Length: 378
Image 1 (cartoon, helix red, strand yellow):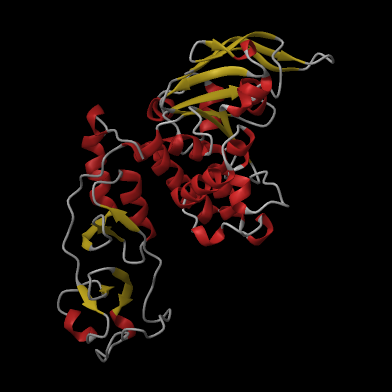
Image 2 (image 1 turned 60 degrees about the vertical axis):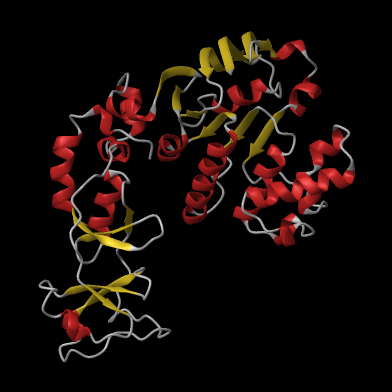
């Protein structure tokens, strides 16, 4: 557990970066600090490992004052991940990951073996061990940064906008991988971001800081979206906070049977059942491949054969997938994004179950919003 008790940071010129911050980051959970630029997020984070010394107040980790040990010893027991990973460019990936264990006296062979295990844990193949950071993509470098932070098996991790420097697709992948790791490891994590979507996706608790380092509100993500404490929090969370809140409501909606055609099968087979001219193309394993518009084949000609290139006039891949038992936000987004107006619902292996329309999702929403037990983690 990380606890801030009336912690402030003021500079000689009178600037107050953090103002009387009192906050608890519970053990085994992700607490996210979020807010606009200049609100003291990074300063608060860096005071935990004493890269910045507080002007007043007390910070404790598991009831131990962080000033009771040397800064060097303190930092060796805390994982730290920053934007752009902060890797040593002249060291290989495996040596970057093994940095802290080597500093604390672990034998080189053992440290490298553990480093390779951690690389695989964060989704990097062992074959990357002897590469240098410059030979990796931005997302791969961030994975190395996370592995390095985990190398000493720290109970506490500090993460300062670790995924903000990568593109949106890679960022989403890293977030999901991070949640998977946390589910396995159960670290106490203090995470800084300026992105409210990232905060509510990752956080067990979200602390919103206002400019000047004032704590505006701390709450579970669903509570933050439903009941912002003041106009500042409501504005920062955003006008579409109602839509974001759908990410905490289970999508136990009725799923309709979906007309399908297998790759390589004649499109004419689906004419009688696809009354709106849209049919879903699946492969032999019932994995959805995309939407086919039958008017593009008035003669009932064959669909794409296995291995054929997918062309826009045959197969529209604009639809998204929604997992069975996911959230209303996922189901509604899938339906609204699909060219047919139907979101594709799949099981945990990605196999087709059926489809759902936006209207069905909204009907379910009317009932689900009155039931607090429908809230789930996104």
